[in-house]
Length: 341
Image 1 (cartoon, rainbow, N blue to C red):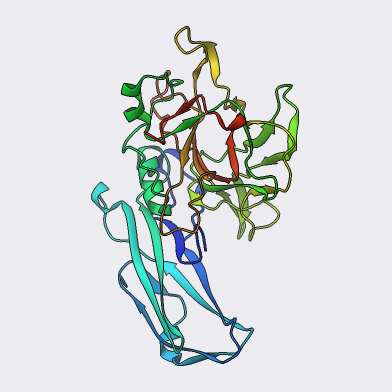
Image 2: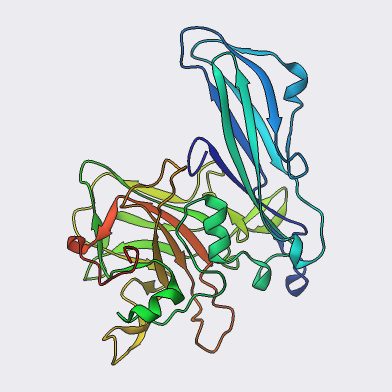
C-alpha cells in the first residue's frame, strides 16, 4: 500500500471520454490488492472481513463467502478491492470517498483505510485540486483549497496563506547519506504529455542518474489511452511499476526539473524577489500521523507547467504530483520555510 501498509489510494472517472478530446480514452486506477502476510510461526486465520462503506468499495472476489481462510506461516493471502463509486452527475458527487476495511483474525483486528477520488470527467476544472489530493493520500500538508499562485513567493508572512505551509529552495540535497533518496509520481493530470524528471546541478548536468520520462500515452487492449488522469502512473515497459527512482547516493545539491521548469523558477527576474517570476514547484512537508511517511524530510510536490497568472487560466498546480523522501533544502537552510509558522 501507499502511503503506508494501512492506507490504499484509488481514483475513478465516471466517464473516460472528454467531449473536448473525442476519441481519447483515459486510464485510471480503481483497483488495488491488499496483501495479508503471515510472518508468524502458527496459522493465521481470517475470520471476518468488513467494509464500512460498501457503496463506494467492494471486493472483486467474494472473499467473505470463503471464510474462515487459513494462511500458513510464511505465506500470504491477497484481497482484491475495487473503487466502484459511480453515482452522481453534478459537482457535488465529486471528491474523496473513504472506507475502512476491517480484518479480523485469530491474532487480532487490523483496520486498513481505502481512499478514492471520484471524478466525473477528465481534465480541466473536473480534476481534483491539490487540497483534495492531500486529503486523498492523508499527508496532512494543510494545503489551502482552490488555485495556488505560481508567482515566486516573497518573504512576506501575508503571502504565506495563499500557498499553504510550503518550503521554497532552489537547490536540494540528500538529508541522510545512509538512506536512499526516493522520488515517485503519485498523480498524473498533465494532459497526456511525456515530461522528463531530472535532478540538475548548477551546470545543468544530471545528478544521481535521475533522468526519466513519464509516458503520457500507451496502447491498452488495442486502444490509444492517455495516462494523464490517474494515480500512480506506470512505466511504459513495466505496467506494474510506478514511474520513479531510488538513488542510494546523491553526491551534490540539485534542482528538480520537469518540462524545462526548475526549482530555480522560470521567466524574467522579479525585482522584488530577485528570482524568476514563475515558480512551477511547491514543496509541502508531510506531517501525517497515521501514515508511516511523516519524516521531516518527506514532501509532497505539486507541479504545473502553465502559469496561473499568465495568459492561460488552467494553471492549477496538479499537472503532476510527486512524493520525494530524504531530501532537505541545500545546507538545511530554505529560502522560505512557512511549514514551521
